Length: 207
Image (cartoon, rainbow, N blue to C red; front, side, top):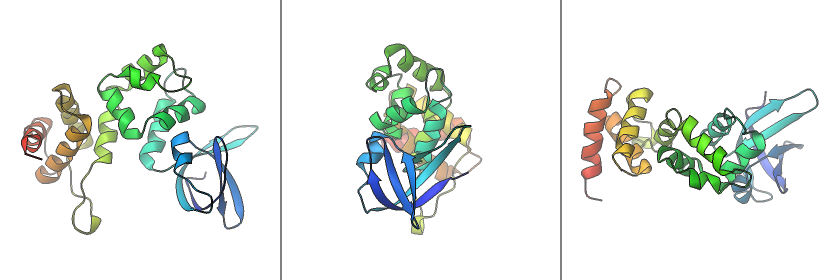
């Protein structure tokens, strides 16, 4: 299975790009957002999701592991296949998608071509409790000296703490950043309540 491709962008199509890896051109299906970020001749590294079927092997390319995770998670929803999942990620960034789900904003997802009101509502309902908080936390973890990741609390506690702050009305991105900072300071043993208290103090700081 191909998990990553590193090479030059040889060509860009309407829904795919050709990535030249040592003289071999791989056709990679990408979201409109990813394709807009590519340029012919550009050196690029894409995270790949490989779909193998009896009649074809299809490669789907993403700029980050988080984006690929969303692609996989979205397809767990009835009515969402690879085409619709790519369309959603072409309309909303992983962070914007996480925010829309956390806030119950089905209207934002409904802006995606091919996604109607009922499907948008189903995506929000089925993913609200398990995906967005963890994804946002992964996007906003601060870095220590020389880019080293700081220690953090357990993912479940962090997810619950972020969800609680969002329910209190805080911006999802700010909530995720505050809990990431709190987890780095309190360590892996921090429970949800401690993270929330420390996160509230972080959010109360003047900008």
